[in-house]
Image (cartoon, rainbow, N blue to C red):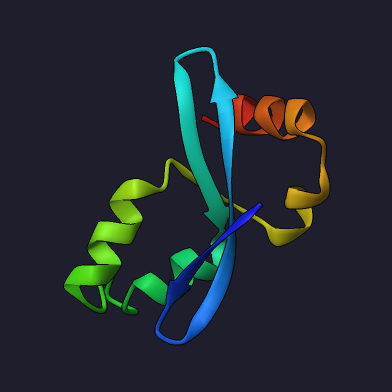
Length: 77
């Protein structure tokens, strides 16, 4: 597991293999901090981070093994 640093805080991120290739995922908490209440990005850096993340999950789901997490995401998209 790697970390993304944004506005002085670190957020966990994982690279997962999907049938369509490797994608980076992170936590909903990071997603919440990238966005303003009106749905706009808090900064240009926030936009760049958001565009690099394929999917955001609840932090508890990062404890699942990679196969389970991949299937969970596939079932939600």
